[in-house]
Image (cartoon, rainbow, N blue to C red; front, side, top):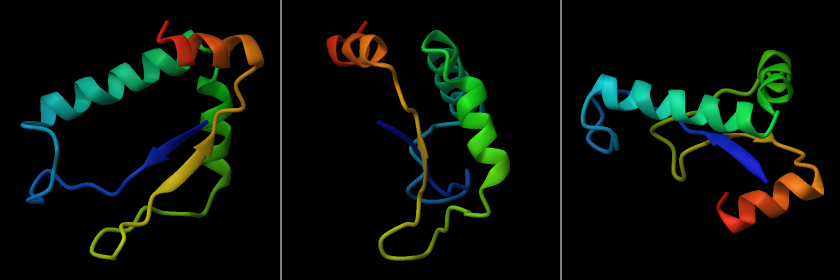
Length: 82
């Protein structure tokens, strides 16, 4: 299971959030889920180590994937939607 970070700009026509606040709320929700499954430090370590950068204006867009390495019991919870 991966967390994919996509390029974004609030002025983009394809920006999926209606406002900057909507975007920030989405980021907060992602952080809360990473904390719930004890993956925040793991993802942050990958973030600090990578030199990859998401790129817009490419086809397809270039995302940066971060491995979650969920333990089996956490993966089961995710797949059950808990």
